[in-house]
Image (cartoon, rainbow, N blue to C red):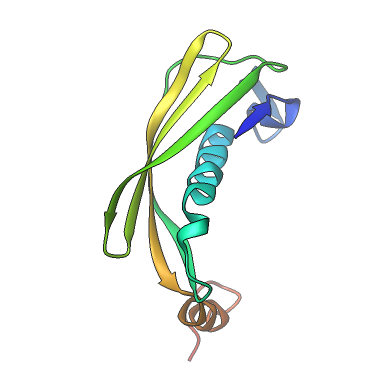
Length: 125
């Protein structure tokens, strides 16, 4: 995926802007999306996938306005576990690398489990 870094993606905590560069939390969100797109064509209609692990090294700052390209490559398929290697590049080369792990689940079972959660996040009776 390709994107332009915007003010909505900068390092900010609550009302305090830390730096006007691509935030790690935004990078992780985009890496998860890229990994999801890498596997979606392989999911059966009755399947979905959930993120189970994120390992990202954020190597270089990327200012607002710069273009970032994130590539997700499937590297491991073990049963229901899928791992994608992540590489993010910017104007000056690699800005991040890591892995996103996902687990394939039955969509009907997932929907039932989510529907059973109470508003407070605990399992319903």
